[in-house]
Amino acid sequence: MFSISRSTALRQARTSLRQSQATTVPHVSSLARLLSSLAVLEQRDGKLNTSSLSAVTAAQRLGGSVTGFLAGSSVKAVAEEAAKVKGLEKIIYVENGAYDKGLPENFAPLLVENIKKGGFTHILAGNSAFGKNVMPRAAAILDTQQISDITGIESEDTFTRPIYAGNAILTVQSTDDIKIITLRQTSFAPAETEGGSAEISEGVDPKAESPTEWLSEDLAKSDRPELATATRVVSGGRGLKSKEEFDRLMPPLADALGAAIGASRAAVDSGFADNSLQVGQTGKNVAPQLYLCAGISGAIQHLAGMKDSKVIAAINKDADAPIFQVADVGLVGDLFDKVPELTEKLKA
Ligand SMILES: Cc1cc2nc3c(=O)[nH]c(=O)nc-3n(C[C@H](O)[C@H](O)[C@H](O)COP(=O)(O)OP(=O)(O)OC[C@H]3O[C@@H](n4cnc5c(N)ncnc54)[C@H](O)[C@@H]3O)c2cc1C
Image (tube, rainbow, N blue to C red; front, top):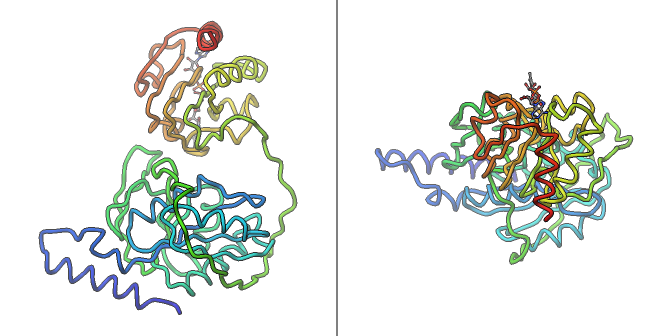
């Protein structure tokens, strides 16, 4: 059933709470029993994308029941894996190879049918390429406004999100009955993959025709940790001068630290590094324990993707480079001397 009634009840409860407690903002938990969240989980080739479990953590912070959603071929096994995720009460899965690549043209109608059937009040997905692709389309079908890239939850209808490349934080309140949300994965640690025992059930499959077709993909393969979730990241910029120098200096440093490799847009545009390694406003958001960068000036659009890192260390020959304004540890020097020196010291 399309549970507008639950959303209406939620809004009425919120209003009456506000009226009865003129000076107190209702606490999230006081409304929790009326909330019912759907966390959209990503899978690739029958493997659960654990960074998408940040959606479960965000849903738990809202309170209320949390259901996980999965679709693709042979997804039943992934559903069984997801059932062990802590905090999930239920898993809904739809087994159909048409959803393997997350094409928004058929995935969004699929999601919407399952939202309607389950009467969910909050739908959450990571602000990943998948989430950014599918969720606005689902929101449009439901005629609601998406709330993008949230970094905090104030209450069931109020969220914080960065704007202007992370230079201002906006607090937004949504009056929509169904809240379609994408979240910044670095702001919500993925839920634990053990300890849960969710009930598994099959969802509805509207089998919408997709006017687009998936042809092929070319994935950058690496044995290194995944950039978005790595605890350490070493990043190189235009200061590295060439792809040869980037490949000569950055991988040994990354290996010495067990780190993922990132890059600035200037480095990517100059062909030093693959596009998938770009950190920043138009690349990936990272918030590792350590972000160590060399030859990066610290342009606002780069900082947008890394300034929430726990410790930022920078090597740059220009003492006035803006990166030093956010760096906890800075070394003014020539990276062609300093990076090999540091790599040797770390290996020793
Ligand atoms: C809409 C928009 C979106 C953008 N999105 C992104 C994004 O997602 N990510 C991103 O990174 N950028 C992004 N940019 C680009 C951004 O504005 C900068 O141009 C870019 O970040 C600069 O990269 P860089 O720091 O490597 O290069 P530069 O700014 O050229 O800096 C190179 C640095 O290397 C230092 N250096 C040079 N030689 C040495 C040496 N031998 N030893 C030590 N230091 C040395 C220099 O002192 C300098 O500080 C975006 C721009 C726009 C307009």
